[in-house]
Structures are given as structure tokens and as C-alpha cells.
Image (cartoon, rainbow, N blue to C red; front, top):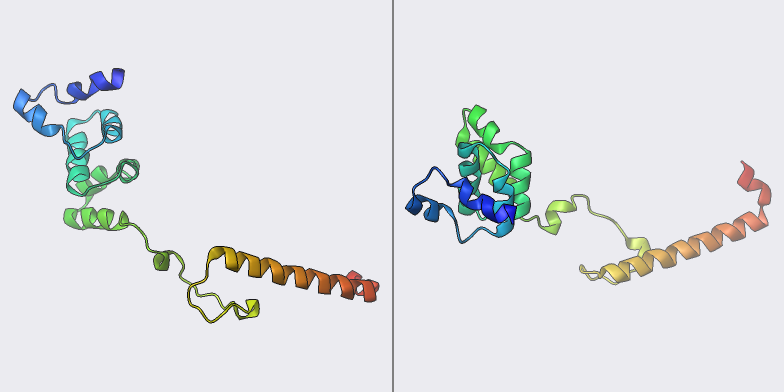
Length: 149
């Protein structure tokens, strides 16, 4: 209930029409919960506008607040560059952005498909590990002293 009462307090110095315009339909309640915590009006307005203009999720808003985007932007001579960099970082990542190194999995004897389900990959790896462990166990049984060296 305190948070609900805190939202109008964010705009207490604004006239009524400005306050209504400041409450954005495109921001969720969670966005406002983060914005309520910001005491400095200019800082809060900056995050409110950037969040609405760039369609930030609540996680993106939280990340930008915690990384002090407003302060970095104020200190920078290239303000547009700082904002562009912040917005570029927040784009959803593609799998190709995450997996940078290709893996050669020929030993798994998977079919020539480029697309492999994770469950099939997991089963193939487990199967090959079982074969390896059984083979290793047979070698250790045949040559027990070899394991000591």
C-alpha cells in the first residue's frame, strides 16, 4: 500500500496535467517500484523517459540503475554514445552470440544434421562416456599396476 501511495508523491511538484502525462501506460507496476526508490527527480525522470522510450524490461531498468547509467551519461562527453551503448547491450541475445567456439562432436556419431536436440546430444555423450568407463575399467582389470603410474 505504501508503494501505491508513493507513485503520486513522485510527481508532487508537478501540476496535475504533467503528473498524468508522467504516469506512462507502457510501464508496468514493477517499473514504478524501481523508480520510486530513486530520490533525485532528474535521475528518476531520466530513467522513466529512457525506460519508456526504449521499451526496457524491468530487468533492463534495474541493470541500468545499478550500473549508474545516469551518472555515466552526465560525466561523458559523448552522451549519445553512452545511451546507444546501454541500449545495444540490452538487446536479446541470439544463441550464436553466446556460443562463440564451435564444437567438433564427430566422436558422438550423430547424423549429419546441423540441428541436434539437446536431449539427443546428452544421450550420445552419456553413451560414449559409459563406453569409455567400461573400456577403462577393463584396462585397469587387465593391468592393475598401470593405474599406479
